[in-house]
Length: 332
Image (tube, rainbow, N blue to C red; front, side):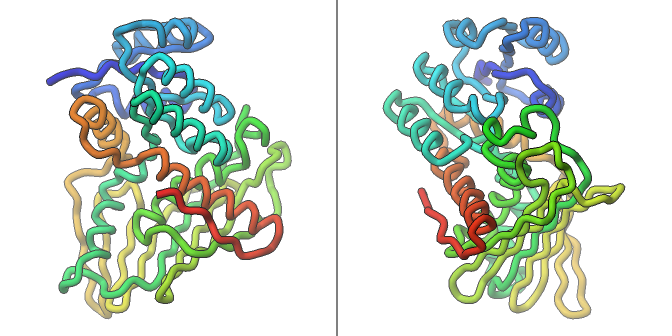
């Protein structure tokens, strides 16, 4: 199997979490770059990396590196993507693609002009539960749930933002652009791109953060379909709650995104659909990126799809600010 040489840009806490999930992925060789060389070297030792770099520029000048996976703060996504693109490296960038639509569009244009691939690292796109739920929704036989009516997405926990995630200029928003965007992608995977967005931001709990710590979103589609997202990092509960409920004209699907099963209810009949395993979608995501670069397979999470998600987030912010209904812009 041919290996893809990927350099991780940014060796922080989330990169560490993801690398623990990717450490045994076949067909990938990882290197690590950080402004703090000791962090890069620590990652190299921990995850059996090929190289450790003390500057991003040094990493990009290394001919062995074929692609990058960007974990830096949101305000650096464009700069680091541009650095990689200018050195003919393919780009996998953590969600959100950027702080705003302008930055994201410029990143896509640069990648296209340089003939390199740009993919957004949205692991929810690859969750086995989400893939299976979408399959059931599309089914027009007895295994389906009839015509789609509503999707209710709930994600609550108690986790105060730290570091740069508290800063509005750095992050581009609060918890919704940082983590709630996962649920936006989940919604579009199941129902497509919405026609209208309405949103409200609850009273803040974590006053050290400049952005919101919770957001409620209501999306409407044609033919009477609607979706709701309740996302909160400030609900004072001990155990996190994450649940998806999908109602069709003949049945209901319920699941937790990272579980290995879905429950389908039709009247007093209940059926469990079990999956082979429970994953967070990261290995499937990185393998998809590898196949995109090495084998020219389709880009399952292109930059334009990342812009779609960001457009919905920005529309939610606008709606909450102006107390209005907003039409999000679709890019793909």
